[in-house]
Each structure stands twice: as structure tokens, then as C-alpha cells.
Length: 124
Image 1 (cartoon, rainbow, N blue to C red):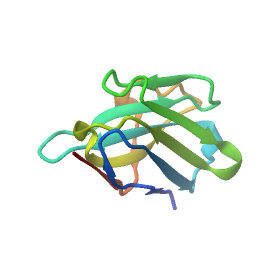
Image 2 (image 1 turned 180 degrees about the vertical axis):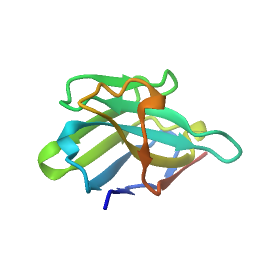
Image 3 (image 1 turned 60 degrees about the vertical axis):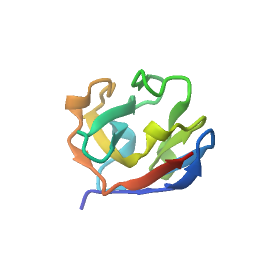
Image 4 (image 1 turned 90 degrees about the vertical axis):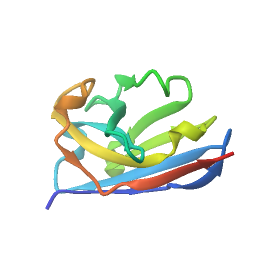
């Protein structure tokens, strides 16, 4: 059974930091590109960041470049998103997702399975 379980969300003040984690199971994690998406109230889900299956290639939405860092630990089957300098507009439910097999994960339409999400709320 394929499963993605996000954690690490919460309430943080603007300018603060959070680290999200995503535990994967049911697929050979190290063979897949992985990514993070988010969905704010009343908005469509948007691509935040992706990382290639082998790790060296990363991609970011313009809105988070320089503030968010995606990483993965293939031995632990875990994906991370380090977020710093958080802004009010980063408030959303954050989802991790499986990307293409042996892929780069640069394109949002390549992702095909999402977790249940973790809420991130940034307050002023």
C-alpha cells in the first residue's frame, strides 16, 4: 500500500521557520523524484519544490526560492522541506508527492500520488 505521511506543520510567526517531513512507504522511495505542493484556502494546489530521484537536482517555485530547501534521506525513506523566513502567504496545507520514476521532478504534472497534508499557518 502506497503511503505518504506528512508531519511538522504548525503555527509560526512571520519570519519564523519550520521543517516538514514526509515518510514514504509502499514504493521504492529512492527510485522516485519527490516533491512538495501546497494549497491555500480558496486557491488551487500549487507546486512548491521538487527533487530528483538521486538527489542532486532541485526545483523551486519562484515564491519560495531562497527561503525553502528540499532534501531527501533515501535510507530513511523520508523527504524534507526546510522553510525559513516564513510569510503570511505561505499559509497552506502542504502535501508531499511521488514524482516520476527515475525522474527529475521538475514539472508539476509529473506527480501522481499525494499524502494527506500538514497544515502550516503563519501569523503576523
